[in-house]
Length: 534
Image 1 (cartoon, rainbow, N blue to C red):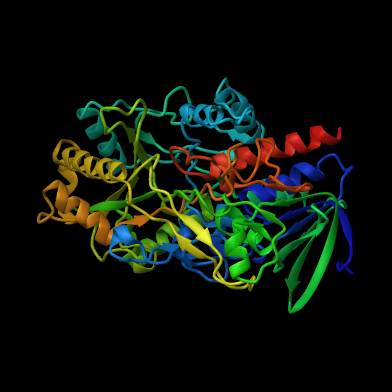
Image 2: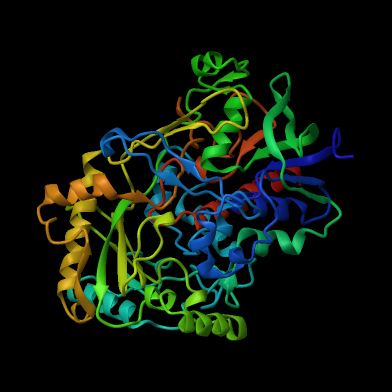
């Protein structure tokens, strides 16, 4: 019955942005909305237990499990990119950390020609999204769909990390999303009553019973349909059947920084020569599609701990596993209710940086990357990366088959500035580890270890063993220049009836985790769209 149907709005992708759009566009009851999602419903139990990201981050049933092409500056290494393939998208499998970025990030967007995207312009939409545990004020909202909470319990390792940062002259910061980002402190998280607060649970669940909202899962969008230069529908494949649906007002692509440019290219919007090389009919020659790719790449430093207080100790002891499982089931507290990083740090590493250029994610566990699991000893870690990387990559077609993964070229660590910041960050982490009280918990540094002493050796370690935190953005850049894909209203250049609304529109990467800013983008986009038809 869906095939051939028409809706006012079609939203492609039910991730952090798509769930917000579907909820907001259907809120007043006047517009019919179709939400298409390639993944399944969010019924996997590990999605809703905060610590469950350790499972879902490698689970193909809810995860695209992308892999990059070889990176030249990394000696040809490929890097794993987990991205959510489920209702809620990556907000259903991420580390739950709530960081907006710096006010300066959004001022820079405005300076690049994006009127309406300064910090003062976007702050109301951050506030609109929030149900902030600490209450509403100039910087924060109360009563919004997305619950933002503090850590339920302090941890001696986190306390030591913050105190050792202060010993290095870095101030304590109890609100990274307030007046200033610089400093060290506990992180807030998208957790509600001990459960993950994803975009699906926060926005979509309260809206899903609306008669004017249709949600279709396991529906892979194959291309946007056009009448002349106007987008008027979407073709998708579901359970082996190809279907098409019509959009009376707009098609909105919210499929994320990988799939949004991919869908545009499959639909004939992209670099003309590349499209023709793959047999795709050109609808509009738009060279910036898939370009401007940015991500946070860095590395981890891990230590062996002299006390059995880490998550590694829990996972090595069946009795303690049972105890923390019962603690979460009965009280929604304890180690199963915490995000991927419990404490964090933002600091300036380079003399010419006007604001923090480095982020630490401090973790009360230690292990390898993703599929490697936790180390079999008591340990903890810091993951360190430049906040505003200068390295740029691209996404291109592999083929014209919608089921074929596009080619991912992040070009990590290609810019010397990124390498300098990361190396200086490692040196700061070591200075902190050598000072009290953090030093009191350390037996020895495990990775990279004592042979890695000089700047060149640290950099080589990052090249050989570094990784990303999957904050890919920028591949459908917002702007007015020749490489921009969407304008400041997020409408795709050169066609009508088509917008892109997700992290791919960020002209530059925000200084921190990307989920909060992606939700803000969707809140602002929905307001612009509804104002247009008011």
